[in-house]
Length: 72
View 1 (cartoon, rainbow, N blue to C red):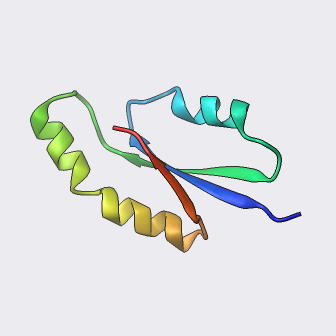
View 2 (view 1 turned 45 degrees about the vertical axis):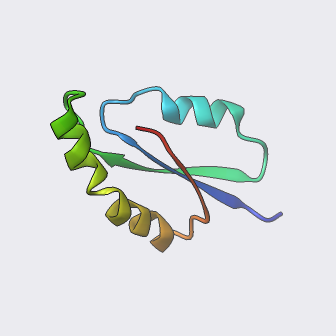
């Protein structure tokens, strides 16, 4: 069976995305998560978090992740 690797890039304070994705994934998929530091939802913190998205995406790519889901 071919395994598909789904990549998530989510804020560090988000504690629901991973369990939600595991619960709804069809067979043949795995979840790989990168977290971006977010302590408070402010324009400044969101701007800082956004600057690191590409770096985290590259890390997921290193793990062979082909599909990405990003939620801020």
